[in-house]
Length: 84
Image 1 (cartoon, rainbow, N blue to C red):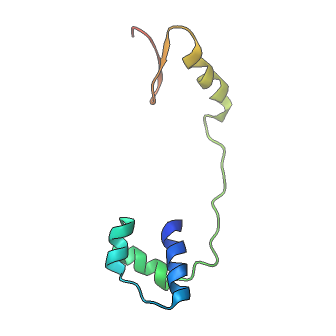
Image 2 (cartoon, rainbow, N blue to C red):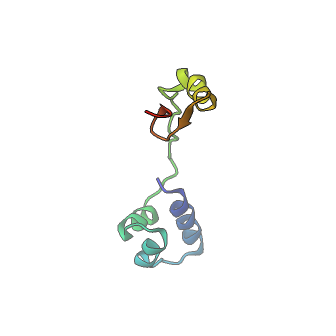
Image 3 (tube, rainbow, N blue to C red):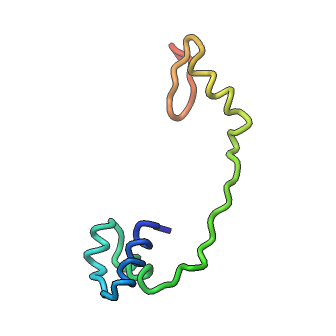
């Protein structure tokens, strides 16, 4: 759910002006039908997603220690020893 579009649509509804969906779609980099969906629907019963722990949480300390160890470089996808 795009909160930026939802908040803008709520402001427009309060003003009583029907928006140009194509123009707003270009502004928010989405399809005009997505903007129209937010305008026409009532999202008052929105449920927040539950926060689940990451599968890597038990290993977080180990992962954070590895880059500071000697002869290690940190890469986004993995930890790798120098020279390999």
